[in-house]
Image (tube, protein in one colour):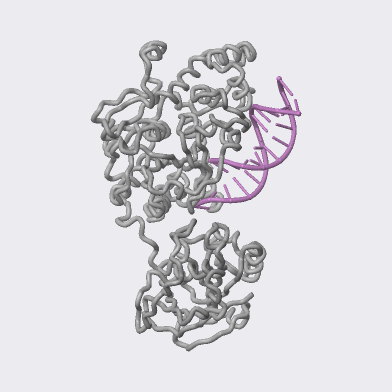
Length: 580
DNA sequence: AATTGGTTCAGAT
DNA sequence: TGAACCAATT
């Protein structure tokens, strides 16, 4: 997908980025990349077209990322792919063939009863359809999230949005996985954005202006860069055998003119160059330069950059390789998500049925735990934890080692504050104020840590089975089972580890950053919770989560942690204690 | 010696 | 799917 090896080649120009860089600004989203990633978790349901809620998990994935952007005050503009353009047909056919092959294999494995092998193959049979896009669009509408369906390539549309002013609907950067965006001349691109907003960025003007960085693009302009990209092989045209990104760059650097490069190529490679390569090459370049896009302000079909008369003539007035021209009303209806861009017809209501009314709801079988903090003194703080559903008052437990020194533990204090905000009064809990001296900090990363309403508990049907408690499904990191995992829950089997090994791993991994490891144990001796706290851990992505564990009745006797055990029998309080 | 292009492996969800 | 690896090629 995209330009072969381009990202690897451009490595020296790629730098890590966090999307908060674009706070307050508009950022374009290549919908396909998130739809595709989001569909991984429900690929089998999608391929089999099962009518379960899981089928719509990709929407939750997408919305989670939208929420992430909104948290950072970024205005997302979601761009969908429209129709296929003719010169991409070969690539599309190829992908379709592979998908179908994988789907058939998957079905065979399913018949054999090998569900694991089948679901792996279903992932490779994944296809993001206009109907999936349409279902997402309905959610975007209800959430007032801006979107546009491109007449053809979303990449071209995104490049266009990157070129125009914010007031006219433009964006300052684009989030995608597709290296084509570089060839389209998109000035700022974020690749590989993770769930916390970390990614890799490339800025085109830095590429052209860099004086010493190799590979050098000092004498390049965008047309030469695009030429290099097409020579290396793109979705519109495979490369001449033996020409990869390095040779393409060398050729363009040397001759600094695409026509000359083409003739040299013909000379050197002779019959290895396909008959119509030069023509296809020029068409591919023209797509990257003048692809058809939708102007949301003028509400009309335009070219990415205006088409010179001379170019039109050189193609004998036939621009069908850009995709056929689309009537005005149709292109607008497509852009606004009212017509299927492939069929140019209204979306089939039946086909689109089954969308949950509230697709973003969390699963229901869980309890919320609310945590309250009090500040008896600056030397010592006490915590209350109670079950918000049952509204039972729980006993207060204290930690003596916290916040002895305000500066030293400010990060920890922040974490604790996050734990207790918003403060929810519940039962007969005493109202206690959050101390003023704890700074309310906006985290640099991962806004979704440790919110009280997101600490939840998953109870399995059989009470003797282990119960895994983590942060909210939506926001927290992976569930991790500590000792064993019931059969049939294979997705996390690979993470099966025991408590000690996790603790020691974490302690080791965090050795240099972690000031303290706090293990939180439930009043119920079977419930364990531990957390790693330090400023660094809170602000960096590497240290993760609160993991809680409830051990089955059989495991009660063998208490593994070294915490004290306190409390009254009828409460489900967590006792907090610290160690190490 | 550099590059291509095929293969394999781990990771994502 | 992509990144990393390796062997064949120029």
